[in-house]
Image 1: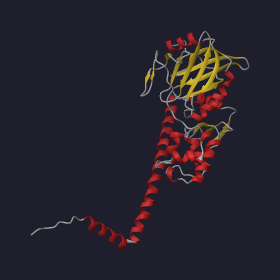
Image 2: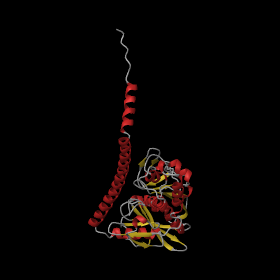
Image 3: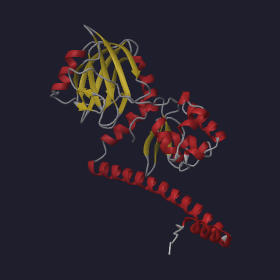
Image 4: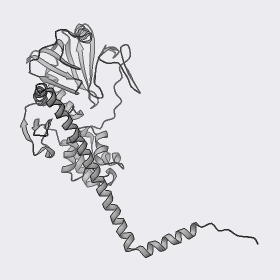
Length: 343
């Protein structure tokens, strides 16, 4: 199961909007770098949210879990600050993997959830001064530790709705198009691969070489691929993952639809938690090896393409050998230094 992409996080945020207006009832530890936040809402009653920083996941859950008997100091401090606080806002920051929950109580507070790198949870006052954080961190352009002003990551992500042929053309360079897109338009590699396939563009094509017609189609596909999501779980002997929509790469796997993305993640997380440790380790190793194989196949495809191009150039030289040889000799003669001897 993969970590939430920027696009998937947007849909999770929409699923959490029912919590706005509700109150935070309690916070529990729920495993390694994993927390459960319990809310009381007027319409749905009690709702639980899982923040899984280890796997970079955020989702609603209906599954009962036994809370650890002795919460740590971080959990106790969060309870003290946020208990019974009213949720006034839940938002994704700048199409990044950063979520902000605003709370109103005795004072306004911001809870920032970072779902990138090692993951972090940061509680700030009304002015975004950090009160406590799960982990102190030092980045090139910002510090995350109590007493510091919280600074959001300076990511410059392109939203799918902003894409057009011109913007894509400006982004294209000498790298494989999938690498360029993954860095600039972080909707998730699986969705980019689907859009590329539908636009008849190979993932190993050099970005600058893709014509305008296909770029225009690609921009449209990325912009509309998941406008109307149909969440599902894909399962086979080699796949156990979730997706926002139908994916041709997973066509051989069994697809099970779910009403929400949260329910997909909750189902897979539950299965993973009941998997024996040895089986889980084997599954993770298998996933790692399959990812490595996929990268190697892409590299092999690139080398085969380059070899074909080099062979074509060699064939041209062979057919025109006499002319090429004459030109080389002519160039060599021109480069010889002229030495005049005064005898």
